[in-house]
Image 1 (cartoon, one colour):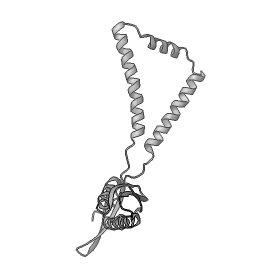
Image 2: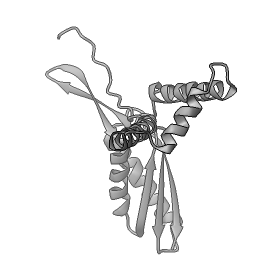
Image 3: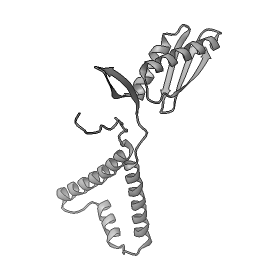
Image 4: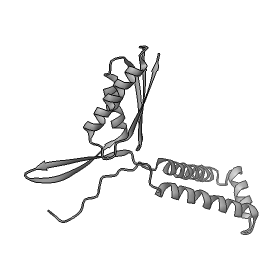
Length: 188
């Protein structure tokens, strides 16, 4: 025993939206500056658009309403992006827990399973149920929604078979907190 405590594995999704917005804004500013610099190098004078913008900007004062409004908007957007980037997202994995007994001692093994992998596993298990033509599964931290299509008239029987198969699968996976399955069967 090393004496250190291990933290459970928790994976949070990356913050794609704030990073994408920031990257697009910086890209637009960079492209505009590159075009303006290239035109200035090629002709020796700024293009009309750059000249108009620079003239308008040089006429602004610190207490102008336009400048203050733009500054407030920039601060608000910046704060929203920072909060969105720092706020932890919904975990995209479910915690597995299995107690193993070996050599006279009980040791705890921790692991995780991605929600998408659990959905695929459920799809495969439900797809093997008699009468199921098509299945679609979504998994979040608290529930599993299984939508199945069948050609048979006996949708309630198929729903019960699917529910039993999913309950059995969830028992096999040893999830720490097992989500509640909800089965919807439609006749096609």
